[in-house]
Image (cartoon, rainbow, N blue to C red; front, side, top):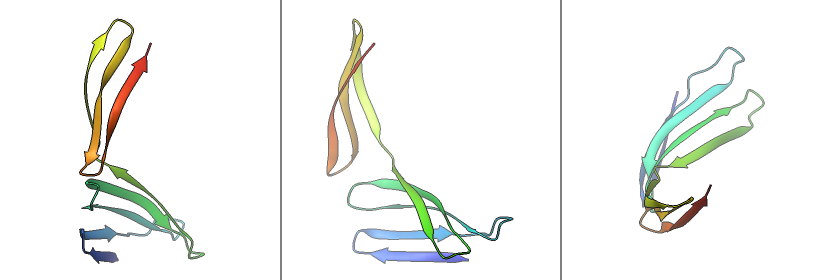
Length: 86
């Protein structure tokens, strides 16, 4: 079974084969105003739905002493600064 979502920001096709418990396993990928993403989850036999949406996030930075400094981004409207200490 396939579900198809069409929106003003692009399309997404979710493939939903059944697992041994009778649940439909959701997997797919698409693009929206934030950027590219993947989706994984399930549609249970009791009709409940749960899924995780992950964006293709990139990180660029440098190491200085015991810290890493840089920037991250996941598309047009999602970015920021990162600081990680050891």
